[in-house]
Image 1 (tube, rainbow, N blue to C red):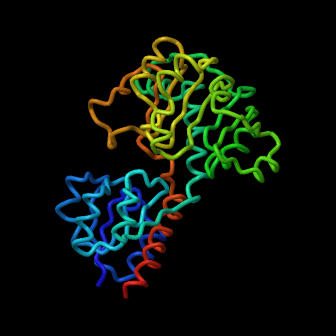
Image 2 (cartoon, rainbow, N blue to C red; image 1 turned 120 degrees about the vertical axis):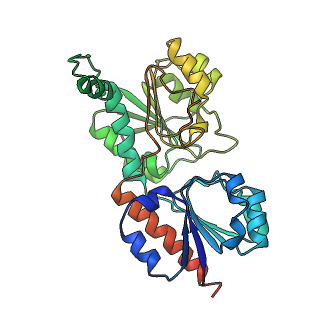
Image 3 (tube, helix red, strand yellow; image 1 turned 90 degrees about the vertical axis):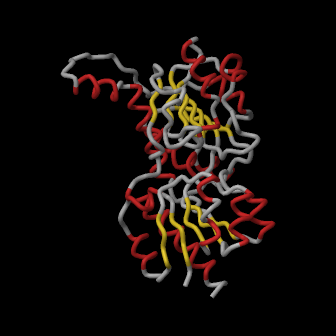
Length: 314
């Protein structure tokens, strides 16, 4: 009997085919609500053969403790692997799988939702109306603006034609751009440097993984020296891509128009979150990929990944 720990809340909270597939495997399931910290995982991880996880802290210490017990595999629900020590997993012989290219439709739609919500003051108007306040704020059109995409991977490629359809000029930078995509989508202007994005964009959206090269890719130097057009910055990737304290300072000093984010450094939301209550900041609770369609795609693939790995143990 295979013991499986499931911690991803999107997987748990959304009914669908992924539940049917998982329950059909006959695994012994334990469900906890993540994301779990290293401290919470250390006492329990050795009891499980595998996990279907979200953004839990699979540090070297956690993986070593798991290996001393039963742990053989980590199936990541989602794409980002920055919370999993991949070098430690490889050294210990623990298999790690993720779910690439399943959430671009949902995340790209969320980017546009955030942009329109801010540009047309949707959240402010809804809040005012609930208080029976008829406060009509003048909005801003997005048509004709230059939208800079940093990271032209699966989500950036899904987002580009939607932006073009809305009349935006699409500018993109990627360290290893997909030339086939660029050739097939002539309206996408490929920037030769990230600085070109910072200089020329009215809106900047981040679509890169979190690693040592991208942590605080939006930092003090970028905000106060590189940005030229007082852009809106959108982040649906990872909270630590942006230095929150500098973005707050940038908004207050007129260097950044707004920060629209679906992700934070610390999740779930902490009452000490510096972005809370800041003017021209919109925060959503990491729901960019949480649609019924996307959850079922990701969940089903996470289960199938674990099924394939489990065949090797049986």
